[in-house]
Image (cartoon, rainbow, N blue to C red):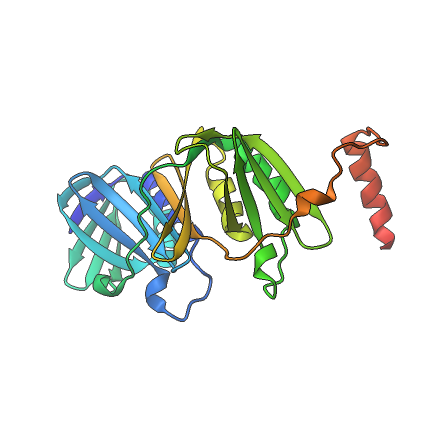
Length: 276
């Protein structure tokens, strides 16, 4: 394996790949990033059996091949390389990374022991990335952080007609937001319960991506969801269970309400909470 790639493009792709990696894992191989170089370019992937990422970038490939290296170490190296083309070359069980006057050698982990990354074909629908990112930021904060009840540690996506509802609760508060949805895989109603941490990272990553393609599927008794934009894909295992019917808590009509200035309300709340 031998290829050359732009330093900034590499750094962004590696950062995306390691973003979803677990901070600690009992299987060291799951801390790796899989590098796949072929005639079409370079693909960097990561997978921990629950969440996977895949990013495709342009590269000049002299010798196709695959390598598995420590993700976080590769990210740190890529962020500190000088502004020059980066060359990767596999030599036996080592990967030599050269950029300008800098050279690093990484140990390659066994590629054949790495789990197969989920592939999701087709598309369920499209949604605007900026509105999705804003909705996730507003809703995910209400998700529970208590793993004793996994079903409320996620954000429920409910697809109906031309809208997508995001819901989250921790038993004490509820957040709901509706955004436009363009169905491309049929008009059936769908639900997907996505881990809050995962969907928060997806919202941040794809916030300026135009449109996000979403695919929901069941494969080998595993329910998966995939988010794709800008040659990047994140797949996530869905949380199993029935999300509480929180929409019933809201009446269809509200007789009494007040309209207040947002900034004034925030400031007043900050002053009052000093004595809580």
